[in-house]
Length: 124
Image (cartoon, rainbow, N blue to C red; front, side, top):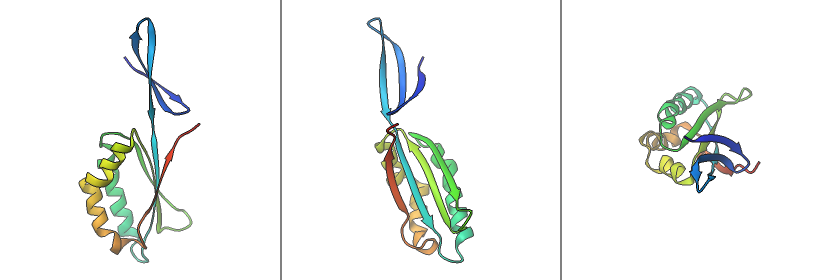
């Protein structure tokens, strides 16, 4: 049985006893903040497209959370806050997930420029 415990470097999983002691495995959680800015007149369409990513992404291996936000001050600005168990899982999401590929093909028509994607690591 594994007991998840929050720790400063991400999630600490305590597994069974090994040699009379409990072994620990630390996972480095990868956090992503991605922002999108809709072209004028495309706010509702971009919102619809981004919402369509949420359910399939949450089912992907390594996805801990995938939360979409909209600015209350500018309805054309959207932000994803994501947490992944590894950079490899994030890379698979960005490069191989069919729903992401569909969105990428539509970005020129929906967004002012490419989305800004920043990767973070939890340190405390």
